[in-house]
Amino acid sequence: MNDVGFGRPPPLLGRYRLVRHVASGGCGAVWLADDPLFCDRVAIKVAPLRAGAGCDGEAHADRLLIEGRMLRELDSRNIVRALDGGEDAGFRYLVMGLAPRGTLGLRLTAGTVGDPWTTARIGRDLRNALSVVHAAGIVHLDVNPANLLIAGPRGPEHASDLLLEESERLVLADFGIAEWVDAERPHQEFKPGTRLFFAPERAAEEQAARPASDVYSATAVIVSVISGSLPPPVSELDGLVAQLRPEWASFVARGMAADPDDRFASIDVWYHALVRAIDADLADAGLDPVGRL
Image (cartoon, rainbow, N blue to C red):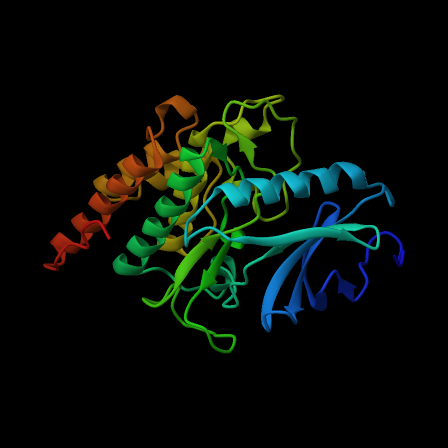
């Protein structure tokens, strides 16, 4: 075992050869890696097993193990797959399927706004993922465009002018702070750039995890898709709602209600309301409804 020190894993973890650093958060990091056994490229999330540089390594390594176990319980083409895991050189790692087409967040940053059909597909994929998550008794707690990966037909890395092509699908990733329903969780620091997607109750101390928090975040994602802008904080929501058509105003006001009890009862009810809002726009334009994809 080669101890390379805290922070940077060795070039080889188990059988996986690290290729490129992708992202960091907390005490962990995500790497692009090659799997020589199956001649495939994968994503690996890595956390140190010991403390260092102000980071409780053991706690984050344990959290990575919980994340892997959660993912193994979830079976959906719209949720990232846990393929393998292990420990090597002072690090614990989780191997996941790769979605090489970037994230919804990157495409939104380019200024693209979703048309009705694209918005419906994004809503469908959010519903498909979160319905499986919630049915398993889990709350994601970090639904935002940066955690919505884009998967599509195999091939080279792909750039698109669309938010989501017909051949693509969203894949929900990063269950790093996910919790079991009704589990009390400690206060969590917000990550820069994602605060506006977090439900307001998440700022409360020892707030129990509830699916309603994911409903809020999913609505905030849709607001970004149809506007091309970040969603407003809940204190400014009335200003946005006042500018929307009635069907959209009702959808946004309920989906992002300050009180979790006032939100849609489930992600399936949320999706049906989204489709009604989209179909109302299409009807006014003399176009056929998208229906329930």
